Each structure stands twice: as structure tokens, then as C-alpha cells.
Amino acid sequence: MQPDSKHFHMLLFKKLGNNPLTSFILICANAPFIILATFFYANTSALMLTCLVFIIAYILAYRLLVQNNPHK
Image (cartoon, rainbow, N blue to C red; front, side, top):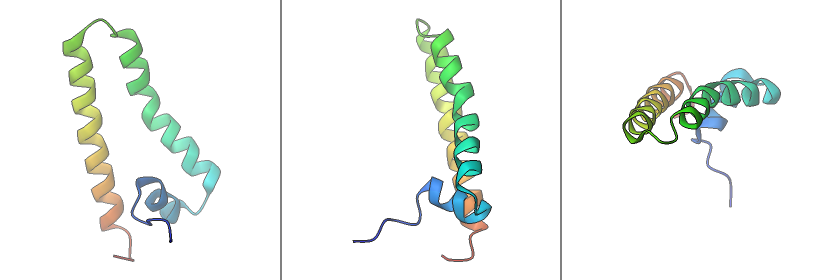
């Protein structure tokens, strides 16, 4: 059984070709959302908005990576 090459991190790795850089970008992309969730842990509305923004950003980034990946 082969791993799925359509995972976000695999698409990013194919684009960059550098595992440490891929990890760094993923950490930096997730860090703001983790920090916001930590600061607003008691504010349900802020957490829901943070979640929504994360989902939209993830979908947009994923679509961009899929469109720029020559192996469909």
C-alpha cells in the first residue's frame, strides 16, 4: 500500500523539494492559528472565526498546490 501523494504536506514537498523547508513552512503557517486559539481560549466566537479562517486558508492553499502540481 502506497502513501497518498495528494496530502497537503506531500504536495508542498513536491513543490519545494526540501523536507526541512516544508516542515518550516507548515509550522509557520499553523503557528498564528495556534497562538490565536491560545489567546482566545475563552472566547467561542473568536475561536470559531479563527477556525473558519484556517479552513478557508487551507482550502485555498491546497487548491493552489493541486493546480500547480503537474501530476494530477
